[in-house]
Image (cartoon, rainbow, N blue to C red; front, side, top):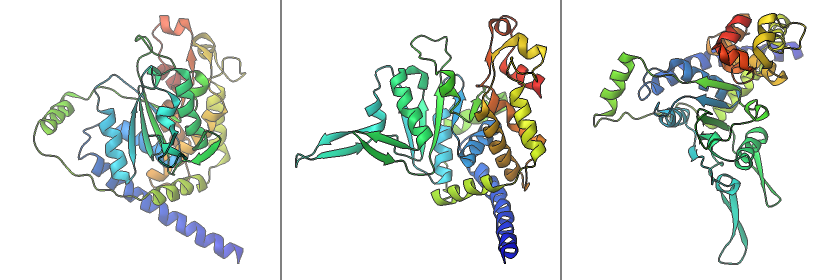
Amino acid sequence: MAITQNKIHQMSDVAAIQNLVQKRLELKKEISKIIVGQEVVVDQILLSIFSGGHALLVGVPGLAKTLMVNTIAQALGLDFKRIQFTPDLMPSDILGSEILDENRQFKFIKGPIFSNIILADEINRTPPKTQAALLEAMQERAVTIAGQHYKLALPYFVLATQNPIEQEGTYPLPEAQLDRFMFAIKLDYPSFAEEVQVVKSTTSDFTDKINPLFTGQEIIDFQHLIRRIPVADNVIEYAVTLVSKTRPDNALSNDFIKNYLDWGAGPRASQNLILAAKAHAAFNGKFSPDIEDVKAVATGILRHRIIKNYKADAEGITEEIIIQKLL
């Protein structure tokens, strides 16, 4: 009887993965009504959401980050809030606070953190105390205010944007906090043809309507489905070896890593590599990830987890170059 039930369970998962492939194609088509190009960025945001992780978006201002997140939220049928981080932002401004109502009873007013998708704009513009309040919510999917524990509605996803550190008035995120983000996604300028299309579509009076394609519960079900996908031991060993090689004091690391890195990635990187590889495989209709799926997600997962030394900076060695050498 147990074998029969297991077969039914497997059959339903197979059908669910095929359904996910189809719905992802529809989702990307819907998003492309508003967002021109940026295929890789959209793919990595969707990988984060369906893996149950968070993402850090790194790029110059003016590349439609807010529009992109808002569009994705609408297409997913989720609530969306944008929080502009500033040097004077307090934890209560994002979490919420208690007030006395007309009956002289304390009443909790929820902050913008109580939404499915949060865009934390310019997260490194705010002091560590406020950063920590957001990062606690990201990790625990809950907040504690005045001794009361409030759970956040699932699915819950934070997309944070970061200014270049060399700009004045920034508070760089510590490495331990950067590690909470599953992906660091690099946003580049559009190509000439894409920019022409952006200008045409944004300077006319026509606006396209985004249709919601999912419910919150469907997204949660797909997140559980992705976690159920089996992974071969050799793929897990490949991911752990790849992460181990980023650590300069590890026996597996080579001279290139020892020369250019001060610090490597921790075990959370290995976990995220496998989760993202599972999602990448499911998006492409595969029922188990292989080493190619791990390679496909490696740059976004490792980019913010390796710390270069002064020699790498002096010689113009980027995180991407280091990760490609490892691969």
